[in-house]
Image (cartoon, rainbow, N blue to C red; front, side, top):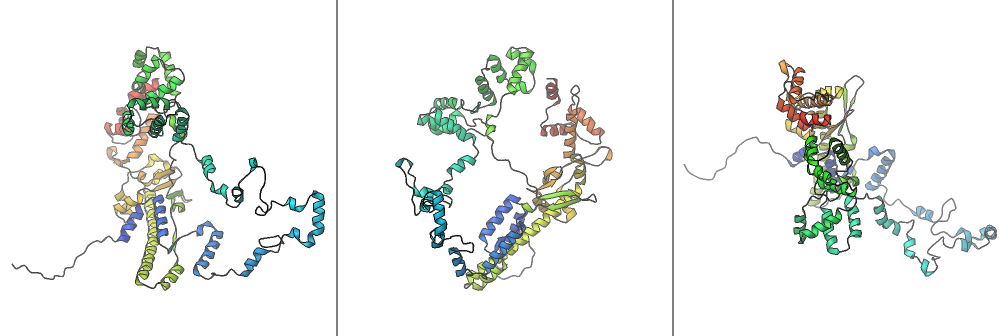
Length: 530
């Protein structure tokens, strides 16, 4: 067998992911906020793209037409000398820039003398400050004001440029700003103030110190005792309980301020785990109090604030904006509409492309214009295809979960991606990308699209399968409606569900109950007995 170079011709098939296809897949799984950011970046990068503002009204459309005419060059240089002459005088006779003062005109002499006699002074004294440039402000040194300070008032001067006052008035006070202000008043030593700033930076939104004293001391290369002494000062700031390292210390700081931190309270705070389990007998024994005193102590703890930092708020709550709206139709079906606020609209400026392509001289310029044109066409088509795909997937989800929109969570059916993909003729990966970071607005609230895909729990005696979310909802309803004297155990819930045709195991009930943050039957019995 000889080894020699040779040429061969082979024919085969392969799937190639073009850059445009990759970007289309990326657009499909973006949330509306990420999509807006992506489109804004494309608008800045591509000169042929412009935002569609036709939905803003007829006035906006007229302005767009005017901008288009200016962009096309049909109205360049249309401002003539008539506009300049109008700046000097207009038909109303009001003095404008460059016109003589009408008060000094000769035909105004009789009226001027009458006005001066009525005012008992000359008109120059009355209107001497009408033009600040001609009559500067004068006065004593104690009332002297800068001419530059007042020259911009009403015309975008220093008051509009100085944003410090407005920023301080409109900005919401944060917990850190509140604590730093108290630190500046309480601590004068610069080293201690620096330690206090590091301590305040280590306090979370709830008001707890999330970093240990040793870690802060090691970071600042100081003794832990110095950090502990400054921490004691910070813990005396408002709101009370700030800077605590755990819940017990937070409550203890608030009890000390109320002068209610005695040995019994100290023992109660040391055994908060027993209080969470409602083991009142053990607490009475450890605290050395009777039942009435223990109830009073627990009531005092409930009056305290376990998160003192929350009064200053935290990060702004993100509102879940639906991508699709579902509403009932008169014939009993459901209508699926896209939310126009979550769908950015872009257009390609054909007239600008014609002018730029005609003015292109070099091959590099022509290639750049062609690339911009191709990207603009691709983006507009991709946005349209994305909208159509979202509506298609959402419509199938609504069709599959029709009982949910009519009867609530109890009507949810088991549903997976393959069922939807087979019904609409798409791949499962496409349906997964469409349902990621998307939500549906209904009359029952706003739900993520992933919420409607639930696992199936088999039905007993050959009945249809049940949705896991619907079963979880039944468990919550049964526990909410249980008799305080006959608390349902997990075994009792299993028997009740099996009677309703749900074949479920005890461990599954326990898992669903824990996911709902519902305590066990023993803890619920203690809570309802207390």
